[in-house]
Image 1 (cartoon, helix red, strand yellow):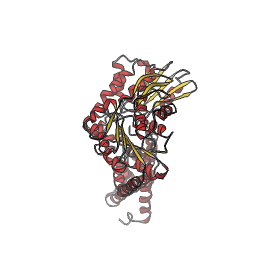
Image 2 (cartoon, helix red, strand yellow):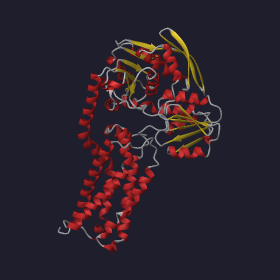
Image 3 (cartoon, one colour):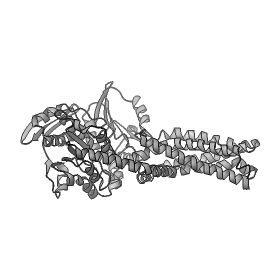
Image 4 (cartoon, helix red, strand yellow):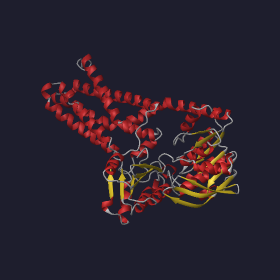
Amino acid sequence: MGIFISVPKTIECVVTAVILAAMLCLAAFRQAGVLQSSGYSNGKYFKWLKRKGNLAIGRFVLLAMMCALGSAVISLCFSFAGEWAAVIGLTAYVLFFAVYIWADRKVALRSEAAFTPRFYRLYAVLFFVCAVVSYIFVTLLNFADSVWGNEIFSCVKYCALALLPLLLIPMLALANGIAKIYELPHNNKFIKKATAKLEASKIKVIGITGSYGKTSTKFILNSLLSTKYRVLTTPRSHNTPIGIALAVNSADLADYDIFIAEMGARHVGDIAELCQICPPDISLITGICGQHLETFGTFQNVVKAKGEILDYTAERAVIADDCFDLFADYACEKSRCDCVSDIECSCKGTEFSLTLGGESRRVKTKLLGRHSAYNIALAAEGAFAAGMTVDEIAEGVAGIDFIEHRLQLIEANGVNILDDGYNSNVKGARAALEVLKSFGGRKIVVTPGLVELGVLEEKENYSLGKELVGFDFVILVGDTLIQPVRRGYFDNGGEEGKIRLLPNLPEAQEVLKGFICQGDTVLFLNDLPDIY
């Protein structure tokens, strides 16, 4: 017992625990990134872990087995070193953790963790949790060795530390729960500050929601309105309470005339929460489909959630033509967006007739596809409601630039790249494939499939595979959704030599480098959502 509580043994326990905690945190880096992409929701993160084909837990089990076996072998080989044999056996952990971290980098995820202050705080708490748990394990093993141990147990006692990788996911969830003790009040204070700023300002608020096309419509509307007004928008795809609060709190609202707020939802009540922060004067609903059925559960819940914006709209709502009837029972003043006609599409852009307030103009945009005309029409209706004239809007349409990662055309060394990486809905995918067909030369598709469709996910990915038949080359990326795409492809006449399955986007890009040539067009269709 005296040996167990000695200073050297205590130092050994502390140093071992710190080293283990560091290795565990490095191994958990991408898992923490997935948790971040899940909105720091343990529930969403666990749902991701339970997805069919997700091997995250299996990889930790394999890591634990290899560490246990490797530690036992090395410790027994160095049994002549006495009590140091167990310490020497820890080199197996360093080796196999390093191999795991290297291999984990090859698993398909679209975006890595963003190094935000909240992520750093989560990681600090995770390190503390891992260090405490590791110290408890190491201390208990040394205690057992001092009380009941024999020569063999003294050599291999640290093999039991292989249980720690199996506890890494629970430790990450625990760290997240502890961090929320600070994060939730901090976020609520931040959101209340933004709400108060908006209430005290005279800025006009335009809210945009829908199952798809929100971000594209937001950028188009911003482009139109900016020719006449001072416009503030939520950045990129920020459409949560924190995203809206960040945009508001980082700006002086007196410098702006209009605030465009993108509003996203995965549950009934989410839009209402956003509207309580920034009640819209004008609202736009871009369209409704089965996106996010994984969290909504039913299509009716999708409609109910998106319709919440209408309960808060002060002046007027503009609703996409194909979903207008879904919101017929809402009492606010609303109009159907049917102001576009005679659409002509090519690989050079889109031309169509735009009718607002009884006046028609023929307009042209560099944006590609029929769906772009409908997005522009909805944004034009919003701009018209905000006070722009038909001529001002028509002139503004010509100046709309490509929207990053949303069927963005990039020309490089004679190759056309269609970057549609942030479009993951069914309608957007079909529109992107139609645009690809308008180009000459060989046509290549890179995709991991469609996501967040709940019970429709396998069916729609099978249909996507069917629609990929006929293209010159198809690369399926990832390990979660590509199997139904693959089945749909081969069941409908797809050719074996025209399809490849690769684990991640970098490997797909390497294959393309040795394959594409001038005149080819490559479509990156939904390059992978954050938690896939």
